[in-house]
Length: 129
Image (cartoon, rainbow, N blue to C red; front, side, top):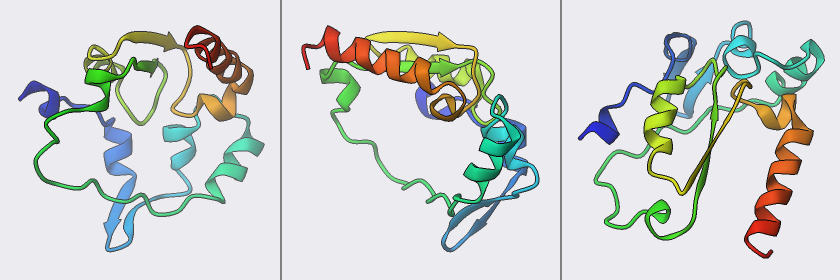
């Protein structure tokens, strides 16, 4: 199935992590470029100090019905993402109701908070919330 076999993770993400029983740990020395490429050094230091092991994905069959199939969904493709390849993001995004592309790293909520806030405000108005 193409959806499951898409190459999504960047080589830097794969190489920068170690799987442990608690989850995947990332090297603090290299994680800034992977997740926070367009953040200030101060923001990178703040974020890296708060990282915990990332839980490994659950293996098994996908549910019959997925939320994006029945609920209007938006996918933000972060084109400068050092963790997830933009081409892979676009494959996942193709299933959504709306696709937006931003020239940001993996963490626009940290590097571009006003952009994210404006986007969420637009979605709230658009959907009557």
